[in-house]
Amino acid sequence: ACEGRNIPLNKNWLDTWCTLPEACDGVLPQLLNYEVRSDDVFVVTFMKCGTTWMQETAWLLMNNLDYEKSKREAVLDRSPFLEDHGIVSGARDAMAYSHTLASPRLLKSHMPANLLPMKVWENKQKLIYVARNCKDVIVSSYHFLKKLGLWTGDNIEDYIEDFIHDELNYTNYWNHIVDFWRMRNEPHIFFVTYEEMKRDLAGVIRRLCDFLERPQLTAEEMAKTVEHLSFDKMKNYEKMTQGLKSQLPKSTTDFQFMRRGIVGSFKDELTPELRAKIDAWSQHFLSQHGLTEEDIF
Ligand code: A3P
Image (cartoon, rainbow, N blue to C red; front, top):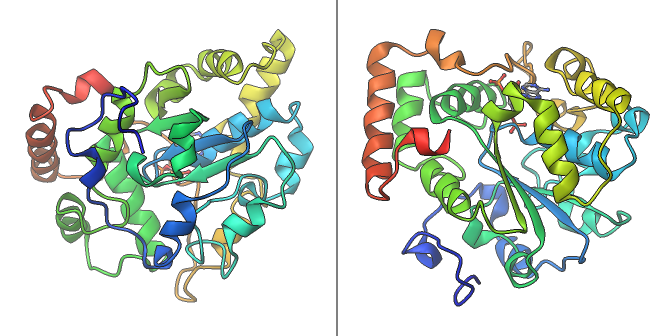
């Protein structure tokens, strides 16, 4: 869909391989042909990169800072997960549901660039991309998928094997990130990292206001918004991850979507050997693109 549009993607962009959730079977043609509205905004991420945090942030800016509605309604009801046909919201057809929402819509997807609706590229829709460092994503997604029963292996060592061999949903992680990183200077792309959101959320919000063509927040609004979006506040919004809780296996009693919310949680969850293994894999991939992790994070 990007051919001829001068977007500097991976050489093999159109052939980029991606493992898809089983629940996506059959919905891909529908997704690729998804009818977008000119003021739709997409939030795209590899899983566990801070999607929900960004959805909350962008949704507030697009909805006159309606903090009360944001607490009252589940994020996936306000900002549907497009390819979700049973991944996290039971049997709901999220694309059909999205058409019932008023404009402007904020639409979430974990799809890699080449599997997003073709109109995203044809129309140059506004698209927010959040990236997060690989080792934290591995740790965060390990806990998440295991608790949800979506990965049924035994331990993190096996999980890392599956992750680096592209056997998990939405992998390859680096392909996903690098494609969007290369597009970061396109005017319709807002590229940001979870690490930057942690470092300077107010700065990210200022950049986002410009990107979304919304007025800058007053000092008072900014303080309130940053507080509303803090990990400690968000973890207490009961409705936020409503859809997820109903998907938990009966054996899971201690699931927390808002788990740690820090940069570097891998440091006390991965042994030096496991970190070295992931780093070697990352370096191998990135060196083929003339990149290092520091170029992106
Ligand atoms: P951890 O598992 O490392 O705690 P996603 O929404 O893409 O699934 O990402 C979930 C990750 O983002 C989780 O990471 C979660 O705790 C973190 N997160 C969600 N809201 C956050 C916030 N307000 N501040 C910091 N981290 C947040």
